[in-house]
Length: 507
Ligand code: SF4
Image (cartoon, rainbow, N blue to C red):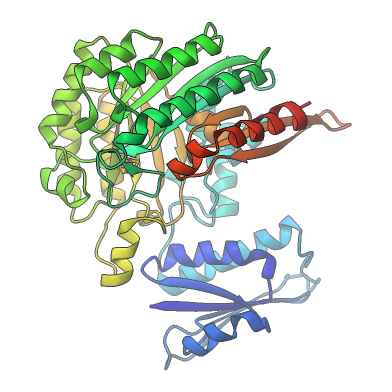
């Protein structure tokens, strides 16, 4: 089912779309602009306009018609003083009024309150952090989130809690004169149902994996030179599944990192071991011979049947065995990822997963809410067969939270994605000093990230100071193609892009 929204606020299509979708997750939402001829086809296809959002100087109006035969409901917002509303298309105030009004109206109509209120950005903790940096107490920042953005008390306090912890964890990081290194390995044993990452079946690509590692090493050697004089704070090898590489390939790759970059200041070197069906003793030993300090062994669920449904061709026992093998090899910082809201799973299944994970006792746990991404097989299945129940609830979130805390962990980073089950969030929990620092840095966007490999996006962060002493951050990016063959064949062009970014733009 498609719901059509018409507005005269072309600039805020994204905000309207994002908020309405949170209230109506099972439907496809299209936002069209009044009088735009390009949207005529949509008007012909969809029998009626579900919501009209109109804004002028005197009044913001919403007309909602929930069904072809339904009577339209009209809502208006004016200033009590009778003053005109601040209609400055690019102004923050217009956007804030729109979001608040839309949220309050949809909340009234549907009878639902969203845990994150009208916040639609990926990093809700940022507001709390900025307000505390500007002198507010944690209580004041939490009160602001509840009052101005309708965030629940629990999520407002969580935001403040995490913002405080993040600030402490990131205190040793060199924002201006440092950087982090990301290397992407876009191969996996099979493709998970919900996956939207660059992921190629390693069995089908096995003849090109060596070429891929060669291309990466060339990119490493060429770009290391661009970062001379900068401090390397963290390294993260992700993907995909980096441990789909053979032990010898991992050895070559990590040796190239250590030979080309100064790793003496590293505070973290993570390799996502990810899938249990890719982990062997030889590979773990190869990682241990180097400076790798943190790995992840990700079950996603400890329910056998769900693993099969989501296309992960490994068993629960393989997760346990890989985890124990990693401990035996000496890893003392192991992360596990789980997903809430997986097909067919209820609170009992999540409780079981947490009990099994607690028996293993990892050092950190990342709790994801299932996100139904456009590029995933899951999205295609939903489009073809309708919207089955992928339920993530406050109860399942609480079960995961309580389990993580029983293991001595605290939440230390949090982010949101589009199309998340239940309007919740992804939360990283960790024991003290077992944090995933790169995970915070990628969200913070305050440090440059040199990103190598297919599908990676390098970032260069510029700091400029305003006359009043405050600083502005501007980010320039350079991306690599997602396709493995295109990346390998165009490696010289990928290197030139980094030279342009870091040598010419970053001068
Ligand atoms: S392991 Fe991760 S990257 Fe690989 S297919 Fe599954 S979700 Fe995608």
